[in-house]
Image (cartoon, rainbow, N blue to C red; front, side, top):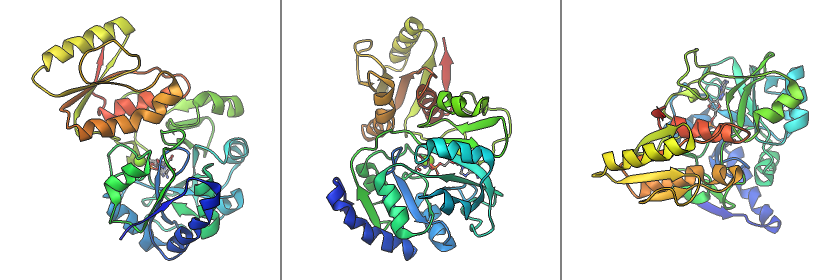
Length: 338
Ligand code: TXA
Ligand code: MG
């Protein structure tokens, strides 16, 4: 049985005691963060983490982010360096995940056998309070079945995990909608492994030079640091094509593709209204809206059983970098450049 806990107001926060007990006892709780929903368990409990891998059908070699409620708690599980201190002081709590050298107390399944660990302090109050009340660091991947679009509402979590985990906390739609920015903080220059809710521009202002791992916008030639960087990810069931280039050319190409695949059920992802006929979903009129709606729209197309999703590409400024990365990865880098 999965228990649903609705927390929409401060006055409902007391319900978190039940969830914290579950975490302490080795159970699994799906909870909101400011980015996406997470599937959480005690990060120091090997069995509980094993259960997460199983229920999520996650590859054993894909490490999990550990969520903390204070820098002191974080220092117990990893070696916090000067770069990490600077970034954490500026951006925690918030959508930034730091990859650092791990300490021995962390079970090896959490980090998939790596000597590094990904840590983050979420800013969502429910998430923070859950960690505080549980009094343990919480290991939590995004609350979606492995490889599928992330969950930005409790409804999405219910679709994937109802009956399979102990508790699902429902606090509505998450604020940001794309996952945290993952950076390798072990040395300078800092490398962004996965762009996310915290923009490269903001990190740059604090830390100076920042490199993008070459898997962020292209297929990537260099060695992947973790299998979470696998090619097709956040993927809908449908085949997906991303069309990249100048506005007019993109529109022309997408119309051509609509004709070419006439006999199929097509879904179009666009960023302004009125450009196409058919089943078109406009993600939003500004970057924040687009980020917030992205995964939901991928899930909607899945429900409609479309055969092909054809998407306009997005820009790479600010939060746009994370959006473009998710679109390209959802397509398995099936990109047409025009
Ligand atoms: O916003 C988020 O980050 C959400 C919420 C729940 O916090 N979590 C999330 O977790 O997106 P997940 O498991 O879906 O993605 C974790 C990413 C993966 O790309 C994984 O490969 C990477 O973090 N990662 C974890 N540990 C790592 C490590 N030691 N080195 C490099 N990458 C790591
Ligand atoms: Mg994920």
